[in-house]
Image 1 (cartoon, protein in one colour):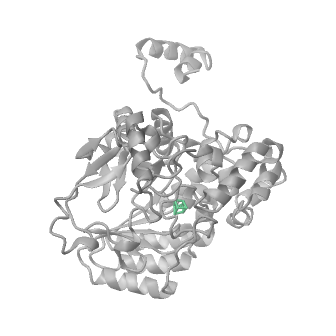
Image 2 (image 1 turned 60 degrees about the vertical axis):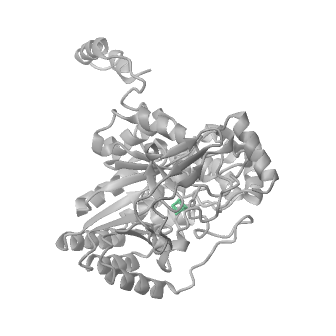
Length: 469
Ligand code: SF4
């Protein structure tokens, strides 16, 4: 029942009268605000595997990490009879034949899944993919690549990617407290899986940090650093603080963004005394040095947001972090509807004080076709969510075009809808193109999932692949 209708039938007579009046004046809208979902911590004791878990244990980052699910047996123990056998078999086959990431799901995230319908649960669908979820004909696009954004090709020094003139990405580590099935950095992040032997950093961590900081000190054109991984929630707080403090002290660095999905997947980490103290010192130092220090998180569905997440975010705001922003990934079967996107954005804003910022189209990594949407679908979604949120919190849906970078989905230069090839332009050179005179004149292709093409387009791909394209 829509919220206003509900209000008409509940509350004091005065409130009911007001709701009735409001109902008369409210035109029907494609999206009805507010989201119907209640903002509560789901009761973890409803799940067989967490039946005896105390509140203290649940709130402990150490307990959460120790009980993070890494295999099918552990997953079965958490969900007990709720876990369908056919889903278990499909996940097992997926791990052997398709998965690009190993299983790693903290209890906090498992607790936000609907145990009564795990097949269609949006969090399960992207964190624990099953073979039956994937596209049976085209699991991968013919042009899918392990490092689809060529981040490693653009390392200025190992682990420091420069794809834009004024901003860089520092990959401090290659692990996370949770592994997402669609991870763009599947080439480097996480454990080896049957389909993918991961690349490894060659320099020792300490030496890499020194090289990154030396490069940044010597490069005044860079003003903005994303400190990422992996996930900074897996870096001991003393190491993170040491690196970020040195970054803050570089005079030309004005913006620092700490990237962590763990803020949602393992909020307990950010509520530990030593982590709170370290984060607070970094926030103070940033303010003293006139640097904007923000946290960027990665939430793909409103169901992942709970009071525990809101509590961790509130601490960051109290410390003086400039902002906490969300960069979600647009994933078919997870959030690629106007309602899912708007429910997520309103829950981020209203309940968690997180600014919706971007939705990235899922990148062209192997076996991601079932998650990806076509550029035209992304454009339609962008249009559908306009006007509901304040302008500053209306997320941009972006396509990360290989060799170009992020582009708003309406910036496409030309588009062959039959073969699903969009063409994009760029207005700067990356480190790969310093002596390439044509880099700024060229058009760079991006490919829609083949399943979204008309039959004639799909036939052309079939013929091209058979011919060895
Ligand atoms: S948290 Fe980020 S880096 Fe880690 S697995 Fe997920 S998408 Fe990849």
